[in-house]
Image (cartoon, rainbow, N blue to C red; front, side, top):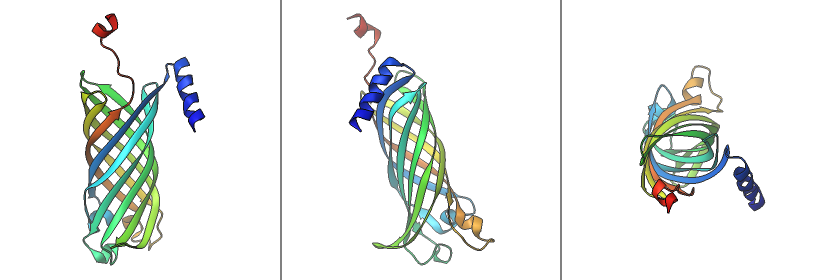
Length: 202
């Protein structure tokens, strides 16, 4: 693994198109589910958390992976089952593109795809799960406090498609899930800070 990372960094020095720009984002999120599906009709979203990390960029497109954990309290047992809560775990890869607005502000768009799992629980007991595919697209606004720390806020549209078998009349209700994930967090920008013109002259 160390040799792989070292190889990437050496290659990046030869090719400016491929650049190591490591960063880590940690955030809290709140889901807003909507549509005619089980998550929206039978659950109430609670605060969750997540992270994304990108080790390098290609043509200024950041490439990375992320993880989201979201908890939902069951509000309608007749639709979701006789359980207390559901937990949604998303694992995904993504690409993102930053737009510099000013010296301190940056707008970033993101798109990703991966896998997910919806776990059904009461207390510490698990009562089944559903696995599937997750697609997401979003945008966030970042503000640099002082290198390497930044704060950010944004929202992602998240579409889940679960691998579940049910009666054809209810297939779409249990198979699909749509939500907006609203989040705020802190970013650790581990790329070397660019010098301003005065520093370069010195």
